[in-house]
Image (cartoon, rainbow, N blue to C red; front, side, top):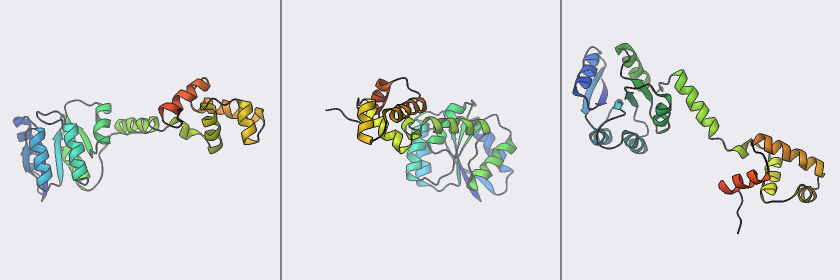
Length: 210
């Protein structure tokens, strides 16, 4: 028998979820929690196959509860429950380790299907949630990671304030070649001038001035 911990501060909602799983032979709601603190203690000290965790409850922040429990029990399956379908909020919880994100108005069959999916080691994610995660991952890529190794070298020299002629001399290349590199660097990093390159390099601790 697979064991669910149901954490939600609304008694009527918990009773409704329990009724749904009363008709499922191999899955049961074996425990309940009514706030973040109680949920954390029960997740930490007992064994569960999946946790249904309301994102908005009294007590400890549910997002912090999720982060903390995933550090202690990274393999614990956790599905977030919410009243509102918000992909950006879902992204926060997925980044913190959630295995699924469901709205409370989903039909019972969907709930049971998602619980089975997560118990079997799969994440439940909608296409729109996947798109937000992909967009976020792409935005997290550092701009200078778009550059080739040679372009990175030129970028650092430009950020230090060296002129095209100075860089050309140091790298034994023509000024025209360095100017081409500079143009590519500015395009790839979506910047207007050398000053922007310097600010970026300082911000990301790629260069240091004494």
